[in-house]
Length: 326
Image (tube, rainbow, N blue to C red; front, side, top):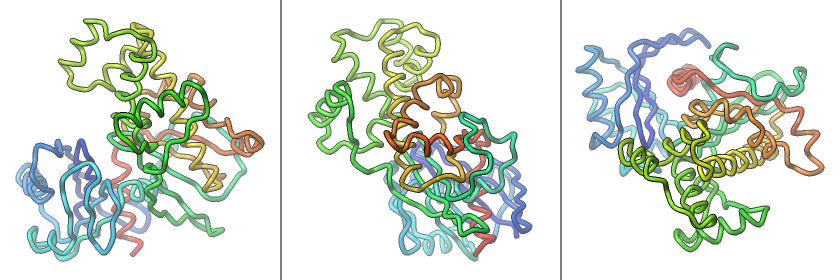
């Protein structure tokens, strides 16, 4: 089967053409577009058709948001996607919508060993449920139920569950964020905007200000999270180092929460741009400390393999595998 596949996120939209043969997926002509530069998904698809000279009769779109009744109101974009409307406007014979992390979960089965970086090997003989967590523009989460033969991916919106502090510093963080935003979710602290929020909190907590060179980097790049992460990796800014250490501990804690709830002995997979861009920092202690910190359940956590997904087209591969399975 040949179909147009897409990954629609708050920052970027990726499109490609996939051919499926059973569980095998071949992806061609992948391109990325800035989501906010377009008024609608239809406009991006039309641009893709113009750029590639291709067209398809069927499409599957992985969308950052909950999908119900063939519709999705995207969480970090002002778009309402309706599969029936997309079929009409794009002259497609069939359109499938699925949650973007559900698509990543479907894509896990298409990955090769070189598509994964091991953070913790876990028990090589363990089998069972698995989970996917991805920090990027937001915080996506999905599960893979193990029926004894194969995994069955399913979507969740767990990233929007309430943030829970465990240390004096984290209680201070919660108070700071609550005064600004009211309710505080895990996505508020474990995401790109979360890094920016944590950095702002650390400035207040440590009673300091942003150095001029970092102010310039933020202004030129337009991305506080990226500038803070880069400064921390280079050890140029103590506040940035503290910010990223706090971020990594919280990221590990929440990934551990998801893994514990899913009993993810079959594996924990990290997606999203933040893991890819900060792979070395993920290897250096704070993330796994947060992941393992589950009291009496720590030995169970240590059995779970933890891997980072290196293949950037995993949601596209997963969207194609989802359609092939229908």
